Amino acid sequence: MKAAMTGEIASDSGAELKTIRIFVCSSGDMIAERQAALRTIEAINRAAQGEARLEPYLWEENTNRFQGARSYQGNIPLPAEFDIFLGFLFSRIGSRLTEEDYRRDI
Image 1 (cartoon, rainbow, N blue to C red):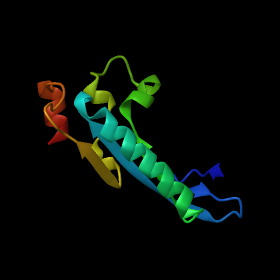
Image 2 (cartoon, rainbow, N blue to C red):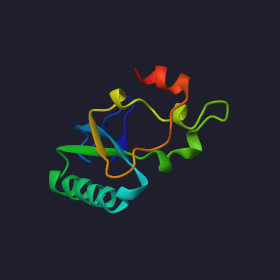
Image 3 (cartoon, rainbow, N blue to C red):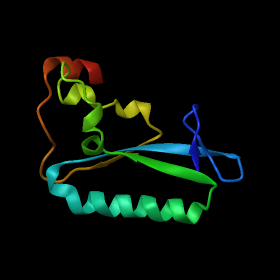
């Protein structure tokens, strides 16, 4: 499969596949659930057999794109930029936001 400039993926036959972007987030106490979600996404991609592609976004896999002048939170895309938000919460909620990051998210 080849990536297209439009954010869609071309299958081996040349037809463009719909890419569905999923923002995956969780607090540190939900690692097992997060891993289960990723295994499920992989299974759905295999079962879809070229009809569509689910593309999970995990901040920890994208730290190489982070810009030093921004805060940690400021480097993470807004969930509204994705097709699906998949969030897991239990006994923790995450890091406190700075005033700037809070305003960015409202």
